[in-house]
Length: 311
Image (cartoon, rainbow, N blue to C red; front, side):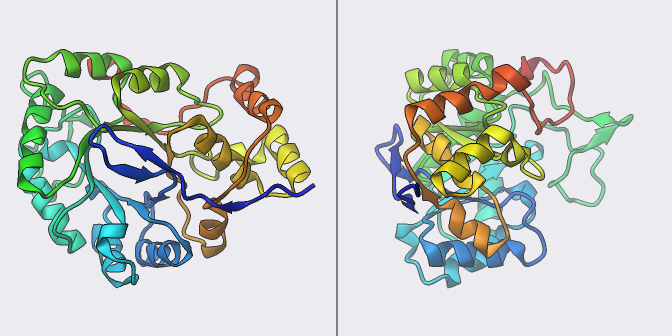
């Protein structure tokens, strides 16, 4: 029996009142001309949400495609992110991102990680890197922290250069600390984190929902080489519904009620990733139970072990 596949047009409401499309195109690791080509392909088939970041090194390609794709800017939801070397000056960082993108504003600007880096060891002026000292990341802490960064991020809303601000890779404890700070007057609109069937993040999702923070799922297919798509349970559900494994997983995310950011540079995958269907309660339960059988698998980590902001 074939499932009723259709392009997903669902949206999720942010605490700003704006609507964010439930499926967006992720562009992490979209290099060379892939950033441009994937955004063009995505816009053509109906995507209205594009996600990038300064550290991805493709804002220029992504922006060029946004400006040349034929879709009115107001119809697109565009996100970029503040890298750790520029947390002391997010306004300058945002201005630089906008220049690379060729845009007047973004819809969402995120603190990419809850950690800032020192820049003393950077000799070539390239801030889009992880500075190292004695072989380890040169962390700007405790002299600086994400509370101070957020205080500055809040001022960006007055400039009109971003419509909303949010966070990425923040834990429950990080968020509690942020919300409790006396300088915090704006609740983050989103928290973009790794989420997939082997890292379902149930507790974090529930906490953010309670606080009015929308979760965005990156690496939604399990990271590099999409290991979740090779799972026997996912494959069985896909065959029974006459859909592909990616559509099963993307539909699972959408059905859970948050934003999902599948990344691909292949036009066929970009097309199929936008198509979702309604999973049965039984199939949802089967996917939810995968982590109990196989255990958690986190694929994205800055590699800064024991750092207090990640606890």
